[in-house]
View (cartoon, each protein chain N blue to C red):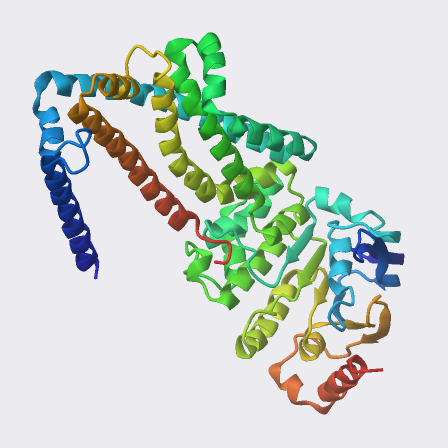
Length: 251
Length: 256
């Protein structure tokens, strides 16, 4: 069964790539749609490959910095909201508001405060903060009610209930948030690079579009997709391991 | 050990009756109950009569609307803070990511006490789970999990043991076997115990005294002593005395 589904995946991908190649060569979709072989050729060119590697490193650096910052802040604020119920309503609204702000509207503010180099990381951090805030909060609140009652009756403090029960119970939900946040951080970093960052995949996308370097543009998009998928795959694996290790409260 | 006193205890809840109108309705009481040291009391009554509310009041998880709840002359929250209450629920109350030993260590960690290896081994033996020390709850049967939950409730030698339908989720055969297991476990330290159950036979088999509650708001309708000597053998369930008492109580639960 597993072999068969893998087979379908391979066959489907090959068909898709063939279709791309044929459509590109025939020029069916216009001049902005190059053949797959032309796009892959970009990776064979030394200078282009070096450019993509350098840019990937810059974007990954910004995305990772934003990811780490957003995650730490999101988790910290979620724990604060959990421990001080009085603050929760306000913090919930603040998180929603931060997430709802259009990137185009806040980017100029960030360029002035965080600088052109810092903007990609800042734009990566915002969605990560929101996702980790909501997933951590939901995870902490989702701990078994019965276990909370047992711990309270045993005389556990609020802090002990958090440490021994809620924090552990929240890990699978947090990992779900982290998984989705990886893609958001990449998007944030790339969009952030459009506002005048010195280097990065976002800069390559923008330049190759403006200079009509279609194969390079598509090659960059492939690199971005590959990085995002790889991060997603690693975190999916982590989530699955954590869920197995922690088990369900019905156990 | 502990003596329990409930004096004029009532508990009412707010209920929404549509269009934002809130109405208060009485769930419990007024109750006046005295329970002596080392007594094993079973609480039976129709569904929704407030049995679980009594247990929550004694566990310090809820406050009475009126009246007074005292354990050894102190409010339950005091005993909570002293780590001298033990509680076990129907099911799903073990930490799923911890082993049997890890779950048994939990009360010691909460109380900031060192759990000696001897005490943990003692508790594992008490639960009849030797050989399963490092099994996780998902690997245990329902009956085994409940024995862990009860051993955990007894870990700190509580003054008061509270059991809320402890065998309610088990099949009939396991449940009967667990009844005898519970008596054996209980006899080791004989804490004052309040057990909620739906099974009249379970109550007669285990308790020194049985309280039958009325429909909501729950009040004590019958307060009867169980005269059988301990430990109680399985043969007791075949005697005429056992059946007479069980039938009497079952009849009292029917429509008045």
